Image (cartoon, rainbow, N blue to C red; front, side, top):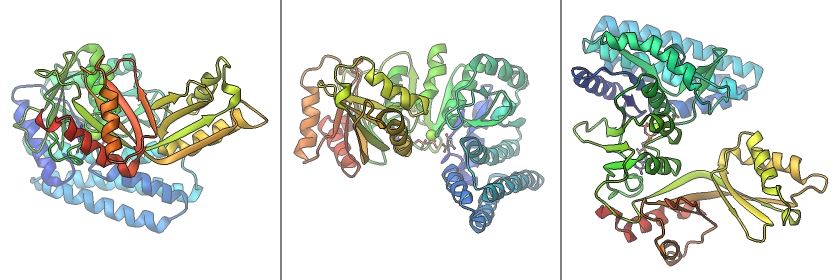
Length: 464
Ligand code: ADP
Ligand code: ASP
Ligand code: MG
């Protein structure tokens, strides 16, 4: 069972988590994975950037704020005074370490991907002991682990690391299985792990879901349950469209498609390990645990032959256009562009090319834009290279329209684009992959919510 940021966001919520664990532990052997308290990971990243600029005063203020926030959570999550004291001490010493790390960054004025991972790891390192305390408060036996201590070993791609699955399975099995056998509940930090040298890594933003499925596979779990703050995976983000409906059942492929295209309720890479092993996932609401949520298995969406069943918006992306007359009819020219981005660890989320071959448009994460431009310029534009113009738009969003029965449906794309046109919204780029599970297009970010609402309504998704 994995509990997300909002589910462990306050002491009261953590008590609810402990009660869910307690209830299900009567029937099942459970391993628990926890996220950082809501908002903490973002704050850690912000402060790390400020620390790099030498802002020691801000670091001090932040440390005080963190201490307050986590102490408050301890006090309302745990009733037993001795236990409260014990967890408070653990929190205090972890925060003291965080202060040293951030102060160090102030002095050296450097923040590498590696040190960034170390800083953000504190979010989960602080939440796990509180959940551990709250479970003990419910008179259950439990033990707390960091991802590294649990045995999750990754490559060294800091910020987006992937597990070395064979090694991880071996270690996790060795370390956690004996506890499960004795009905001791392991509480493991989500998101963070370590490389083979023991250096802290993270598996990407929102990665606690991934930790849960990695552990699920390593422990040969019957199911992986992702407890979050909404009822499950829905027809669109319920924060955008309040009439969004729950999708009770999805296949791994459908869920992956939705996760990649912005259904934050599930981390896209999390589905990889479980789909291979055929382990079902349930996404459930920790605030309404009586609801069944979304079940993800091999089977496609049950009881519906709807052509479109979900729509999503991905923000924080940028469109990068690379033009060059020399690219026309030159075999391997796209490969050169992709190679430059790949070597610099920049993931391309969407591609569209013109038949004239003089242009490639790509969608990448907005934060990667300057790295992408500078590297393409150095590698391919300088000294009369392949590329003669690089342009970009950094205020766009991708809208993805998804459905398992889209394949071969005539006129669907034109209907979708007509909806945008009627709203006077300009489409900047279009892509449809050959699996035809998804049509994606790019609009200005300011228009995104309006298009999502219009598509949700026109395809009657609120009547699913
Ligand atoms: P957690 O902290 O539990 O991991 P996240 O914030 O990562 O939670 O993901 C849950 C959020 O995902 C929801 O609060 C919701 O706003 C957002 N979301 C976006 N699209 C969808 C969707 N199609 N279905 C469900 N939730 C969605
Ligand atoms: N705390 C991490 C994040 O905010 C991981 C997670 O919550 O899944 O990205
Ligand atoms: Mg999440």
